[in-house]
Image (cartoon, rainbow, N blue to C red; front, side, top):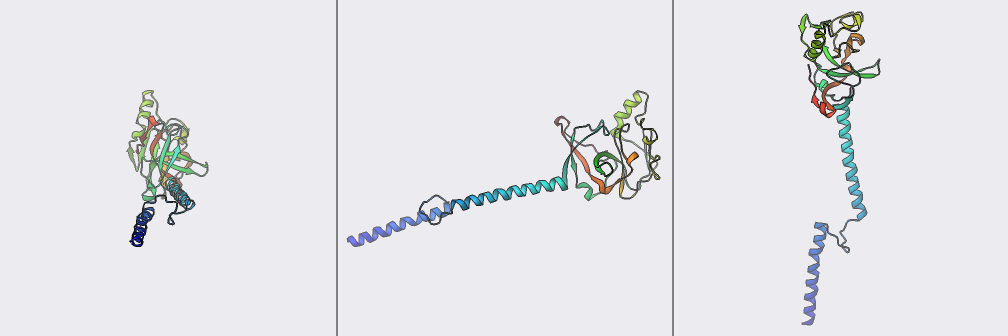
Length: 233
C-alpha cells in the first residue's frame, strides 16, 4: 500500500506540472525554471527591430508625399497681392499635372532656371491660345475674358481714375517687344502675377515650359487665420 500510494503521489505531482509548463508557453508568463522562456536579449532586439522598421516606413511615406504628391512653399514677394502675401505658406499639389494639363485661371508654382528659384503665378493662356493683354483687358482667342481674381484691384484703381495695369511701360502689356508670337506654343503656358503692377512674369520671362511646373497651389495653411483653399480662376 505504501509503495502504491507513493507511486500515485508521484503521478499526481507530475501531472500538476504540465499545465504550468503549458501556461508558460501560451501566456508568456515568467517562469524562472521554464526551458521555453525566450531570452530577454532576443526579445529586446526584436522590439527594437520593429520600431526601426516602423520609423523607416514612416520616413519613406513622408518622402513620397513630400517629393511626389504635396509640398509646402512660402510666398516671397508682392507679385500675387492681394490674393497672396509674403510669408504665407501653401500646400502645392505636385501630382495633379501628371494626370492632366494646367487650365486657365489656376495658380501654379514653377521653376525659373535663369533665376534659380520658384515663381508663383496664374495661368493666363494654354497651348494654342492667342493672347492679347492691354491695360486691364484680357483677350483670349479674340474674346474679352473676365478675371474675377482682379476684380477688387481693378475697381480700386478705377475709383482713383486709374487703370490697374499702369506700371512697367510697354512691357506691361502682351505681346510686347520680348515676343515674336502671341500664341502659346505646345508644351507651355502663359502665366501672369495677380499684381499686374508689380510682377515679373511671362510678359518678361516668356512662356513657362510644362517641364518646369512644380504643381498647383491648393491650400493656404499659414497663418491660421488665412487658412483656406486657393481659388482657381
